[in-house]
Amino acid sequence: MPSNAVILIGLPLSSYKSRLDRFISRQTGIKRGDVRALLAQGRVRVNGQVAADIAQLITQFSQVWLDDCALQAQTPVYLMLNKPSGVVSATKDKEHTTVIDLLARNDRGQLHIPGRLDFNSTGLLLLTNDGHWSRQLSLPERNIEKVYTVTVAKPLTDDYVAAFAEGMYFEYENVTTLPAQLRIVSDYVAEVSLREGRYHQVKRMFGRFQNEVLALHRHRIGSLELDLSLAPGESRDLALSELAALAASELGF
View 1 (tube, rainbow, N blue to C red):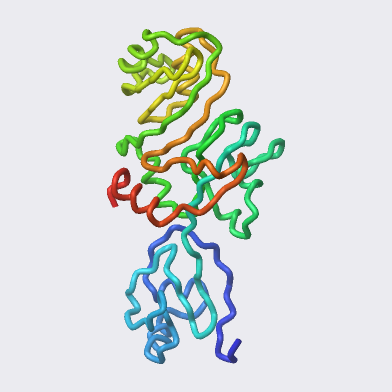
View 2: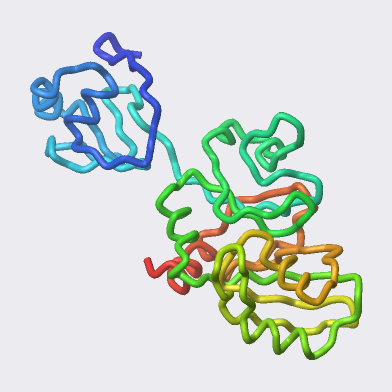
């Protein structure tokens, strides 16, 4: 490290937007009034370019360097994971294995989960460090479709198809669910498509028929299909094409 490199205070990163001079001051302890001189000397780079404007906006994933020292070099992470049964959709849990525990990544402590699955449910789970992306996925008005394969204890009939399509009243929340699609695959297996995610919604809807859900597997969120090559517990980065398709069709980016 060169003699004029800055020793960082080590402030935690967050999903902020900040002026460049304020950001550098917070990260290094240098007075904001002195940041202009750093820029004039060409010592600050943002996303690979020499910075010239102290008012330039810095976001969570801006790459900011002062001399040879990274003030911020976090990159966005978007993962799909094939969640196994018996694993908690949480970042921390004192009693059970969490989906974060399944990841062999140095940055796993920075990740969170947009759209969880129950303890015994399986299938497609997303993880990210991008708060904006996560919020967009979770907005009710986006009406992003989630598709599940459901195995139940009693035979299915066409009455289920009609009831799911009509929507069901949940007294506890005092709401009626949005219309959902149910396609009977076999006597005990159905494919269910929802555009909302109320508490234990699928199990409660089948519960109206006194029909226990034995297995619940999510295989699609919007345009994202679970990669069938992923064994339970395995994960991979989303491809750029997958991110682009989701952004264009569901997130409106």
